[in-house]
Amino acid sequence: MKYSLFHARIRNRCSNLNGDLFRNHLSTSPKCQCGCVIEDADHFFFICPKYNLQRQQLFAATRRFHPLSANILLFGKESLTTEENGLIFIEVQNYIKATERFLKVVLDLPCLFICIKMRLACSSLCGFSGTLI
Image 1 (tube, one colour):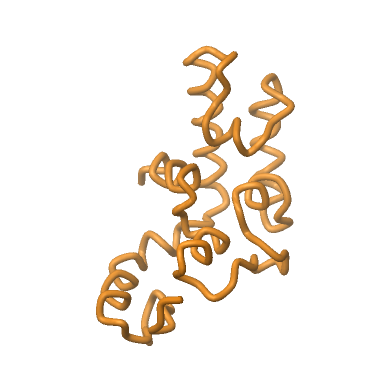
Image 2 (cartoon, rainbow, N blue to C red):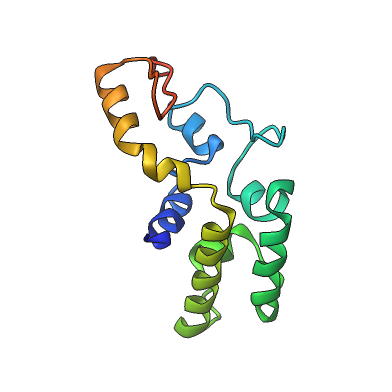
């Protein structure tokens, strides 16, 4: 599975984080399942209590690049070498994989696209409500 794809989607604000879905009129709420008001990149990488263990591993693996920000995790940092930015990106992709946050989305995307195209409320995998906001 290409976790670089998820990394790029988060970078471009077109991921399946609820904040991105809401911003792109594909969800009725930006709220995270943990109860936080918005599930965006900052929340996913730095705040969500669901991923505390995975976050500790990410921070330990990227310790020499601290302080981190979502911008550094997503785009890299100009003052770092290509190899150093590559190491950050590998660890970000390991984090994305370890959280399993996007696993269900990969399996459900074909269903979601069909439901959106047909404007049907899904009774199967993707949970699409049948209306675009």
